[in-house]
Length: 272
Image 1 (cartoon, rainbow, N blue to C red):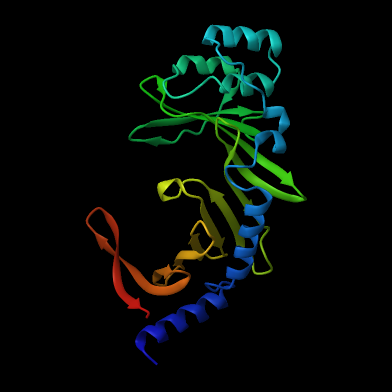
Image 2: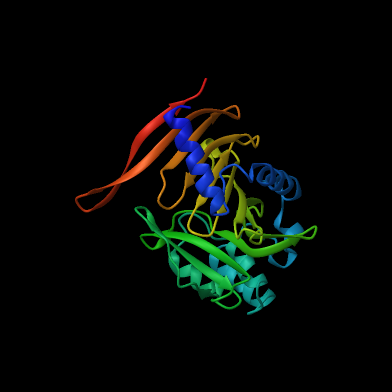
C-alpha cells in the first residue's frame, strides 16, 4: 500500500472514531439539494408564493416624496407592508437618508468590504427577526439593490432558512439545516445565484463534534465539483472533481511564520 493510501486510510479511521467520515453523507446531501431545487427553484420561486404579506406591488412613475406619501396614506406604520412597499423604490444610487422611512430597527451586525458596508433593517425583534431588508452602502448611498430575507419558511412541511429575494421578488438564495444525527453531526445544504458567471451554485456543509468539518461544492447541474475536509490534529485536504470524477487531492498542513500561521501544500495526489 502506498504512503498516500495509508495516510488516507488512517485519516478515515480516525475520523470514523470521532463519528465523522468524509463522503458518508454524499447521497443524503445530494437528495436534499435536489429536493430543495425542485420545491423552491432559484430565480422562479416568487415572494408572493412564500410570504404574501411581504409582497407589495410597486406603483410606477412616482418620485420619492410621492412614494412616502403613498406609504403613509396606504399603510401608515403597518409592517411589513410599509417597508416592503418602500423597498421597491430603493436601488443603486438611492441616498442613505431614505432608509429612515422604512421605520424598521437596524440590526447590530454590519459586514464591511473594501467597497462599503451592509446594514440590516429587521422585522420583529432585533434579537430574533422574522425578516430583514439588507442594503449595501458607500459614500452615503446604496451601491446595490436591497434584498429581502426571510428567516424561515415552511414549504410542503419542510423548514427552510435564510430565503433571500431580489428586488423583483424572486428567490436568489436559501438554506436548509437538519438536526444533529445520532453521532452529533450537523448537515446543512444551500443554493444561491452567486456562482461564477451568475449561474446557480449549490453547497453542503457537514460539522461534527470535535471540530471536524466537510464542505462540498456542486455544479449548476448538481454534480460534485470540489470537497474540503478538515479535522483537528490531521492534514486537511481538498478534492477536485471533473464531471463528478475525482481527479486531484491536495493535502494541506500549517506552519508558524512571522505574524501567525500559514497553510501550505504538503503533498498532492492525481487520479486518471
